[in-house]
Amino acid sequence: MAPAVLYLHIGSPKTGTTYIQDVLWANREALEADGVLLPGHYRYARVEAARDLVKWDRDDGDLPETWRRL
Image 1 (spheres, one colour):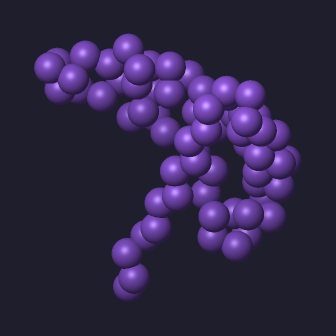
Image 2: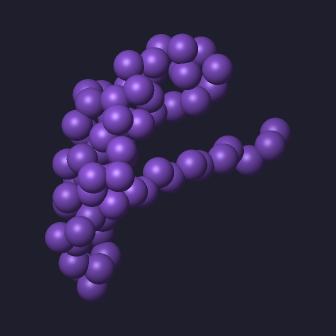
């Protein structure tokens, strides 16, 4: 079995990233049918996870709960 591929989309504010995320989310079912998984149970789960990651204390070692849920 081939290893899974992870695509991570990172963009600066005001560069069209929200538009891209909205298009992906609006087409979630079609993407999943083609084997593409968008993490999270709702649209802004990824935003919450990203905010938690920025505040993450790496010395603590444990990933934020939002990342474990994703």
